Length: 101
Image 1 (cartoon, rainbow, N blue to C red):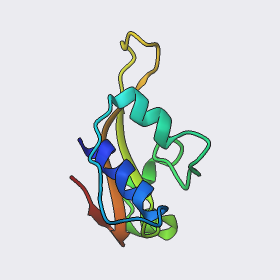
Image 2 (tube, one colour):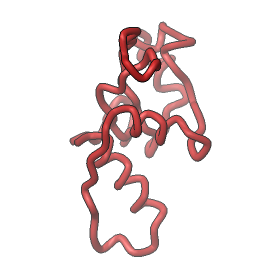
Image 3 (cartoon, rainbow, N blue to C red):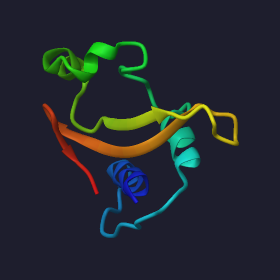
């Protein structure tokens, strides 16, 4: 799935042996926790800055190649008590150009 693929791309970018890739799968909750955990820095979020969804220049001001874009929605009825659901993950290549599976 997309988040397993993005995770592997990031892992390989930090690995000296990039001769092989493992395509992983994960459930959305585990992937969300991994991508928002202590190993990653939050660059910007539409949760705190909704204009990022419509303002191209504002959105691209901070996003650089290699950054990961998390696409999510609110789901207050989740059984695990979290209100966010990870829909999709893409890796930024350049201004508004993303690599995704």
